[in-house]
Image 1 (tube, rainbow, N blue to C red):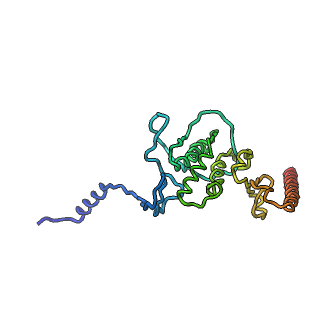
Image 2 (image 1 turned 45 degrees about the vertical axis):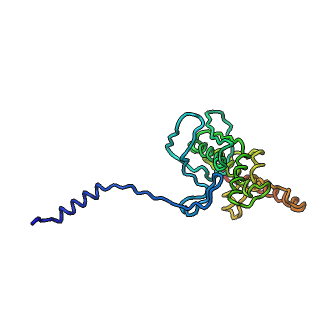
Image 3 (image 1 turned 120 degrees about the vertical axis):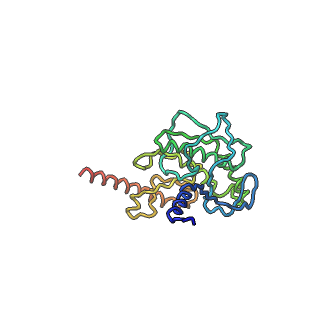
Length: 259
């Protein structure tokens, strides 16, 4: 009669467990509801954010230099730093290009992809300049996407958030500093594209002034066009008074430091 010992059985099981090697793969599967002109509407992808792009499976390079091996990846769209604007430099340059016969989705994503590449160097304290040519084509591609997605059209069939489309892209270009302050004004031609600039102040917030908007350097795209005459007069007086008060406050702070 063969005697089977418990320790031998446990040893055999342990060896099998140690040699067991399997790959765990988590897949998020959705249902395609509609496909048309390069846009797919999918239901059920709970782990995917709006506008998220993982990778292009059939990337076609136009420079003829072969495949690009990526050491890391970053989101093609990220929150704008909110301060600083541009640094005029001349140096090495790379082009992210989508031709006119490309799908509207790729034309829409091309500027954000270029911004993501520029941010890679910006956050490593390298001087970076990015040029978009041209934003009107991106707006037209976005309009085509929005109409296919049956979003409510606005003027000239553009979606209502078309200004936000460009402002959130342009405001990602910044001059970073350790003080995290306003280091440059947005040029006039950029102001005309965006919906204005609102600068928030931590000092005003801590002083109990809510919303903590710095009216001295904030800019409204609408401006006084939407104001009645009486409001213009009152606003001008208040703005001047607030500016004088801020100058007096800063002077008092300087005197305290000297004392």
